[in-house]
Length: 101
Image: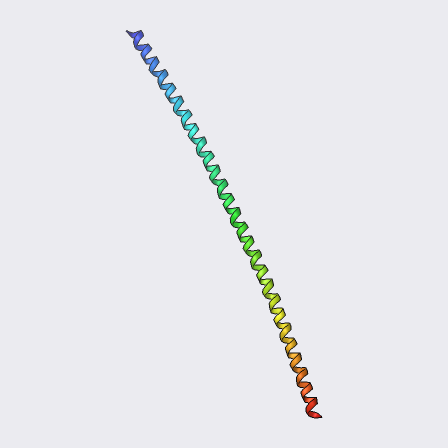
């Protein structure tokens, strides 16, 4: 009877040890999966940040391009106004000379 009880106890311990080992392995697998998932999430976040930076750079380039165009337009307008003033001055001068005669 004692021997049977010992055997039963041994079998139970062995079963418990196997369950614990399997449980430990399962936990380890879950931790590894979680780490992998977290690395993937982190990678995706980095990609997203990169895309946002690219978008910002593109927007900045576009803004600078537009600013350059505006500046060029302003320069043209200024040149045109200066030319108009000169033309008006020449016409006045011509009118004065005409009036003197």
